[in-house]
Image 1 (cartoon, rainbow, N blue to C red):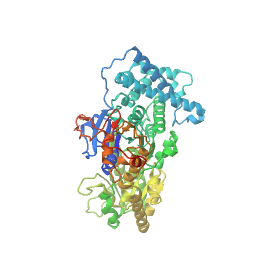
Image 2 (image 1 turned 90 degrees about the vertical axis):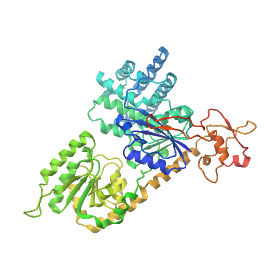
Image 3 (image 1 turned 180 degrees about the vertical axis):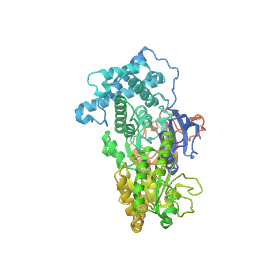
Image 4 (image 1 turned 60 degrees about the vertical axis):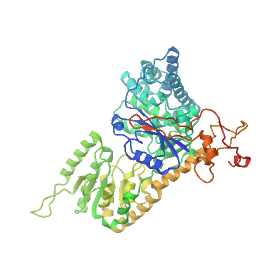
Length: 592
């Protein structure tokens, strides 16, 4: 089958774990064809270029979210009136209590009123999309004074919640700018029959803006939508907008909540990466019948050597590996290590990681200063050079060439975060067969099961006591490490992830009607001429019927990494019925 892979700030650009996950999925499903539709977040991201793409990627189309787009489109009076009506309805929906809002629409509004507001948001969203399709885009209109005034009227209208009523002009300008960026996919030309309309399935690799093209492909072309989320956008909004005014936070949270609810309502299947994300999705209105938990797949091969030789670890060394930023709470870890040193004077702590952005660099400098204050340099004798029991290192050097070497250097791996989604670093430690002590945040408990110790976040004493207990009990460390490795190999490998998505793709396609009618020699339709399994190569496939359904073999498109555009269109995209190259027997036609 042909998959439209929808990404934001990830694949095919050089990026973090999200891009790696997409690359592993595409390469693992080599029998399927992929079209990638990527939204880029920053100019730097585009400048770094793409990762090498496998041959099953047939087309890549990109669109920037970071630059201000203005195609010079001038709308007439009728188009301006349509925009004002649709945007006004959208703003009105945002000024009422939204799904996922802390106030909770289920507590303040009747069920009928909540459904009415959801329909109002959906009608406004698709109305804007249809207007953008008719007029060639809405970038200027979404930034216009008309949009700001519509927001202002909605905030001042009877029934608006308190935070919206308190919005001032600077707040309204900020919200309008954020909404313009989030709604920028409405103006893209991706929703034609030879683009997203030609794929068999849209797979959005995150919610929010990345899923919006999938919603529009479903609206315009009836393409089924699969949504995968390892972190829910509404939760991320709550965590990343602490300095904004209450009005800005409330209105944007309302938008993300409404968009999430509409995405979950229209999606054929939703695949959270963990139970923590699943609970957030249910709170935002996701139907439990659509939910399939699929843990992220990680490559276990680089950690195999460390996992098979746990005896090589230094029994007195604790290791922390990750990205240095305030959310990782290394300050609490350093205070906990001070207590560990009082109980175990020979213990050492290796902090391995690079800072993330200017805030991360400042935080790393603060942690180094704190470590120097808490742990003066120590020497083994009067003529030896002292050294600090806490070391700050990065992978890639001669001592720690890789993350696997970092985990292998210690007998105990520590995670001290106060905020965490799915703890991929913790899973890597489990692949290495290391016992772990972690804080109870995000999906940590779900990841480790009963194979590690868990303590409350921001509690250095509890963290220290758990670490000391394992440092003093090597047999228990060995048992936990072996159990952790077995659990990781069972649940969190690339192979299980790929197998799960392969089955979900077939499940969705088996329930999706054929959108292109195949005709026999007499002109009569053959509704069962292309069964779902014919999309997957195998002994049951009829190559002739498959080519006929596609409209002929597809030429290899030419990609342009600089522009992200396709130079030649696919030959299998057809607007009308196609004729079957060979008659299909009644027995074969009824096989489906």
